Image 1: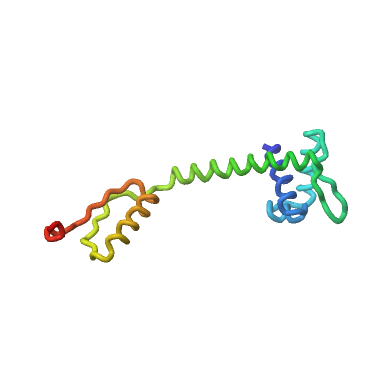
Image 2 (image 1 turned 60 degrees about the vertical axis):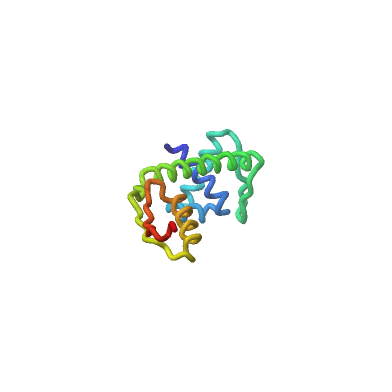
Length: 134
């Protein structure tokens, strides 16, 4: 997918501000990054960057394109993270709590509610002596 490589090179040049920084980040040569961006511009038929020996600046077309590309990469990252979370084993089982001291009951309830947000596949039991009910 050379098209994705071209887009990634362009987005990294814009994000990092120089071709050499993008090359270091992507672990390729600066000339390779320059070539990929030029190929992308040729493919799209529009100049994306103004280049001088001292700086690069986005053209209007480049600014529009990079915003859409960032959304693509953000969506891809979100999809990979969602898949990672789906495949990550989650804890499950039974949590057995002995009788908490009276001063800790509100804290225990808060802890259980927080725990429930992060761990879904669990049950808990709480042991209370009979005198607790009288």
